[in-house]
Image (tube, rainbow, N blue to C red):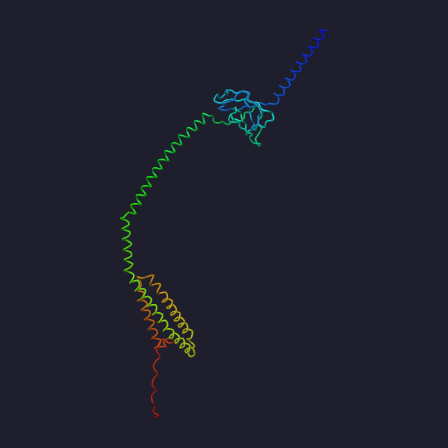
Length: 327
């Protein structure tokens, strides 16, 4: 009876051992087939050790298996890792040392890369990106502080120069607006006022003479209107008897009338010309006087010899008829 129980017990123990061994080998085979190895290299692998979590886009996909100096380049650290076989690592993925939170342990973080990039084969090298360590960050901050100090010193010097230039400018302005310069400006203004006061009577006299000249010219033009009308009437009567020279006579009269109109316009604008050209007023008055005399001579000539408008030479006097012998 005891031998039978011993056999049954031995069978149970053997079955349990076989079951445990089967479970172990199945789990190991499943684990080894579901993960694939990769490598990456970093100059600073602070906190990396076997068992460190590997994150792909923030998701845990594997663990670091080994950390050791590179045999070919001892200045960099070789990091071996296993990740899930379904992890889509590609040529654009970048590995770097990162952390999940400020208080957590370092992890090996791999970026998702690009969907268009080529997928990495198992055993490939993942591109890496160096992160600043605390010592490097401290050195950078020290360098930045030194640079900032130099910049502040340079800015302070520039501010001193600007302040000095500003003070110099204020001193120049004070000198420019001093009592001596103000007295000089006041003297110049007083001289200008005196000059204007002295020239005012002369300018007023020139203005009065210009007005008188304009009035005389207007009266002259008014006097010439009847003469022009008489000339037109004479020409009209002469047209009846001198048909052959009608058109030349009319052309001369039209030219004379145009000249008179131009003379009126010239007289009307003479006042503005005299005011704009005060220095040439005397010469203008003399020329206008000569033009007036010429017009007076022309008027007198027309009144005394109206036939000169149609004939060049004076006709000969008619001979006195001689008394015949019939008486």
